[in-house]
Length: 627
Image 1 (cartoon, one colour):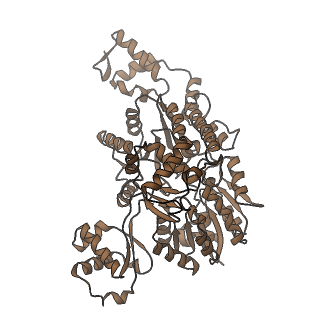
Image 2 (tube, helix red, strand yellow):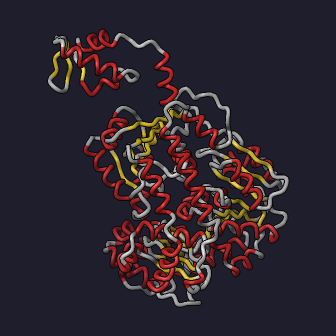
Image 3 (cartoon, helix red, strand yellow):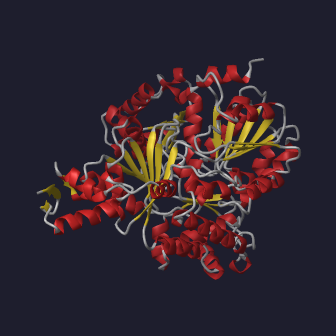
């Protein structure tokens, strides 16, 4: 039997594992329940993908990241590893095809959305699978103390009696000790192993810049650093505004959010990866699964809600181990905004119940109806129809999802996909119209893999190749589907609502204490921890984070802005009057005072003002020169 190292090299081209990966793989192969705490960029996927190639049956991966399932399956296919995914955004035919592959052993790894585990027919289907390993990705979601608790994750424990010999591997990038203990408890782990890496990232300098003018500070930071950058913001509108602003400053930038067309997302990711675009301005929809090692700078234009979110996003800098920066831009109102956000995330319970009722009416779902049905939902149209505020409605839908009444998903921007339903040799006997034949030939030339599995296609490129408009291409693909030549699923941009249970009467809607009251209290605590981190002026920022994640007593990092300011204060201040005069001999820009004397900018500015008053310096408003 091949060793894990041989599997790793054969399929991934690596000759050795990263820290903690080999230990996790070893425990999994020994049949031991395991928890892996690997920070962003630590290589969590390898810890279950390598065992999956060594174990006899299916590796079942429960993950909430539906938008990444396709990428994972495609990446594995590129390495010659058969994989499939199951979530409520698939058509019945796609889901049936994926389950057939799993049952027949034609998929080594199957990614499953947690809401599938609430379906009795799916659990019955699972009994026919040979599952050798159960993986829980984003495992903090199973803990009510975690920052993204999802009740559907509690159903994972029901898999254990179905597959008593299959070990469980729980993976997450960030979790407090309390959450780690809760993960083990909720998954019924016994004698489990815990492997973790230090949360310290020595190559990243964590910096907070206080400013009332964030746009100017963002441009300033980017102009004084080099390399690829990510700028995180909270709203889709702001991604567009900041990308445009940076472009006007001569910085190549593109925006990215969950509402973009899948093809446009892919193009922008590729442009950023290749270096054609230096900066990607994005919501938190960007980053997971983006394995770019040479990101030199991550900027948070808006404060994240929690240190867990911040740590994961900031950790996308410097994965290659080289010096990098994580910068927070802190405005005067940011702390108040963050606290207000908590209130918005927990609208009154009566409002949540009313949203449920109006949603069902809007979607034409009768009481006792809607069971296991999927409905497209344009959120803004729904809110406009009832005159409701968008943000509280989003929060209400999230609470209803966590309570199990619905499953609202707003990340479902899915590319079109197609699979052939006839054999290759049967294509040439078909009697097709001229347009259908041209479209089919373009499809066959561009995507030979359609005979083996569903393939994601670029509709615009295929329409051009066939010499037809996109509208004609769409109609032709529908025609070929009606003729049972292929199964075509058009691209989808609309969020959806899935009903795991039939609609109930509104008076029976109840939000459990752990879903609403406890989560609100925890959210307030996490918010205050985030504010304390960003507001710190005397305590090392890395120490604050490590203490939060259960690694106390760490020495000061020496590289965050607090540590650097403390070190500068201990150094003797230079003779700023002489230093400014010396620099002014050849002239320097007023705006460059902070760059020339980063640790003594205020003293340098005061010296320059005094020398101007004394007539020893001259200024045109932009440049200072010695007289």
